[in-house]
Length: 405
Image 1 (cartoon, rainbow, N blue to C red):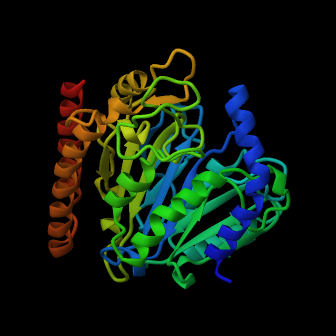
Image 2 (image 1 turned 90 degrees about the vertical axis):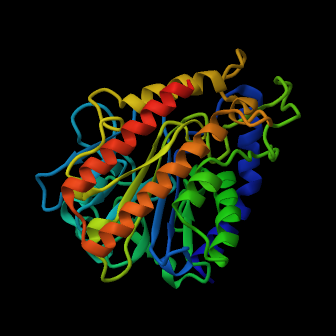
């Protein structure tokens, strides 16, 4: 049985117990931590033959930003929190290696405190999926990780590693019949089944990606629009927006986002478009959505530029992230709960709303980025041009986003 099939079966077996948790959360207002949804997608099922990596980061620390960091064997762009960078939560290095994670507290071990530190070490030290595997083997028994790590590299290869403190397991999306692997917050090798989480998000991500992978139409924009921003929850499908009904006695149009992929606590989404075998790894692209995906914009960054755009960087928080907080506040306006989103704010059915406006901006952003990549694939990446292009594009997007507010 393939890893994907095994994971689907495991999700179904746990669903009955998880349902009790969902109902308890609905009645009490409490919720499981359930942080992060990730996927590794082989180039054999993507639209352009390049591998893809995706992470929605669900966390209480909402001030995510990007940093360019050198000083190790490899320089990299990483998703971080404010302050000194000791931990990284997603990133891409100059060898074309990218890594993300989803906490999996059902793995063996006692703490997930080093997940972000391990990601930083991988980005600094490793160039290939195989090197990540070697590092995991060398640190067995010395790690404090409890996570599902998704990795792709500059050779076009990918893997998911379920890594506890003392051992790990590897899953290859290219050898899976589906061509991709999704993980949320449980592991196939988990030793503490009662502590696994993220079953609704796992099933929903599988349902979204599987038909697209079969049709070979998966690309970054598909993941951003259809997966990272998905609002289907454990009880209803709100599409088409705006939702016309009501949920659990809340105002019409408001839906609960505790268990949807796009959640009330999703702080960012990251997508890495890798390269085909033989391509320059500097052409790998990190796409970042800072803030809740339904309220924010996707923007590209290249490690070869040796910096991040002003709108996405910062000291305490990024300028774009601060604007997105305004939109989030307007979307979550139900005074009785901070977990119910007003879908009419996203799409009012008449051509207005954050999703409608941002889709128009992203159409320009994706076209411009693809045109730039076509130039660099033909003539070779130019660091100065990369730096200027990503800065100007992010600045334009920031101004347009601000004007829309």
